[in-house]
Amino acid sequence: GQQVMQIPQYQHVQEGEDFTTYCNSSTTLSNIQWYKQRPGGHPVFLIQLVKSGEVKKQKRLTFQFGEAKKNSSLHITATQTTDVGTYFCAGDFGNEKLTFGTGTRLTIIP
Amino acid sequence: DVKVTQSSRYLVKRTGEKVFLECVQDMDHENMFWYRQDPGLGLRLIYFSYDVKMKEKGDIPEGYSVSREKKERFSLILESASTNQTSMYLCATAGTGYSGELFFGEGSRLTVL
Image 1 (cartoon, chains in turn orange, yellow):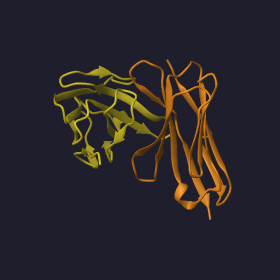
Image 2: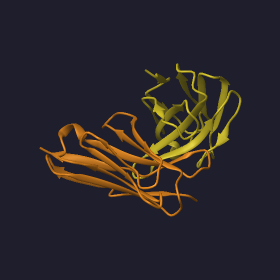
Image 3: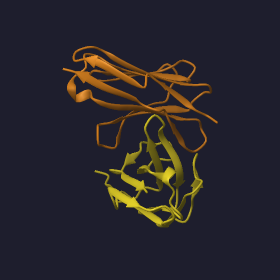
């Protein structure tokens, strides 16, 4: 079946360090979304990328969609304790449903 | 703000019991979804619905059924609960098509003994 692979599964960083999570698909995506889930919470939408090569920024977060629309990344600059949580990508293969990655759990060492 | 309310945050059921998980949304969204979340597996789609009385199978529909009799309410049914259905169940809605922004409920953690 169509899958979205996400790495790493876990990431521990010192506060102030950067963080990146990656998603890859073997087939072209129509679009990709990113969600954040705080510990004990539910996923919350962050952004949607649609265009090939698209780059979007939200304060310290930078989202990229690959030229071939098969991969995407989320980069956080200078992490803060409020960034703790699990980050999910969710890809649309054009088959009427989103396919979620397995998530990257980010922990921050103060 | 969109509000997606799931009827129970925590449930404990016995093997073989029938389980109902209810989800109600207040934003008049057409599309509603049921996911289950398990460690290391992410979110997997069980069923979704894009209209009243309409339902579509997701990636893991086996052992589940759904009901959508009213636009605002989407129910997940486990006809005969099994231990491998112990999980976090998340309801979500989307107003702009099946691949629009998803709004999630708080989740229902089901334990089947």
